Image (cartoon, rainbow, N blue to C red; front, side, top):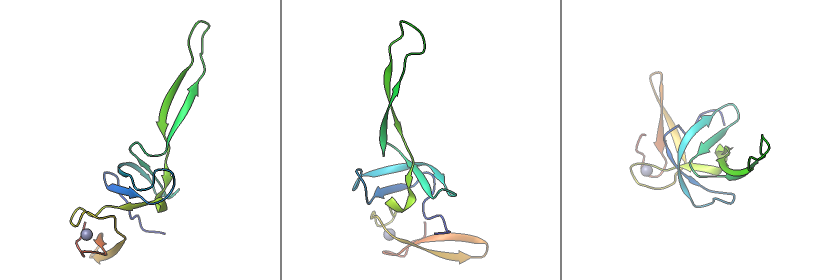
Length: 104
Ligand SMILES: [Zn+2]
């Protein structure tokens, strides 16, 4: 996978893992790692130890990036999680919904 199918700000549908079937907004994309960070997806609890005496430890929730292959972009035109193709118009690469053929 060399082309970025998913962009920051996209809505995606998770297709595998514990968050399967959920819809989320893409907060960040890491093209080199082929990972994406999606809102409220892959939440991990992180236990923070107290740093000073008398301080309580706390549990914070953080979301971790997931493999980009685990998510499909949601087409804004037909509203479905779709596979995308690409069209090259000049220097600009545009994504095409394979279902309704809309560019997005
Ligand atoms: Zn579509």
